[in-house]
Length: 73
Image (cartoon, rainbow, N blue to C red):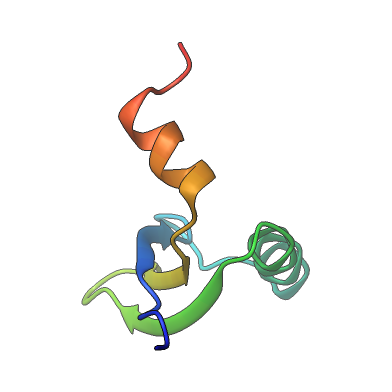
């Protein structure tokens, strides 16, 4: 029997009040997310703003569950 993949999601807003992120900054940010296992699944412009809301997902692992239930302070 195959196990159903469970996902963890993250929502972040990128950009600045006076200008959106530069291409180099966005590339570096996305590469950091990818290295941490995140996959961007949606980008949504915020109305009347230079900001973008980004939704990412990655498989939920036992280690991630532990971090959520017992966050390090």
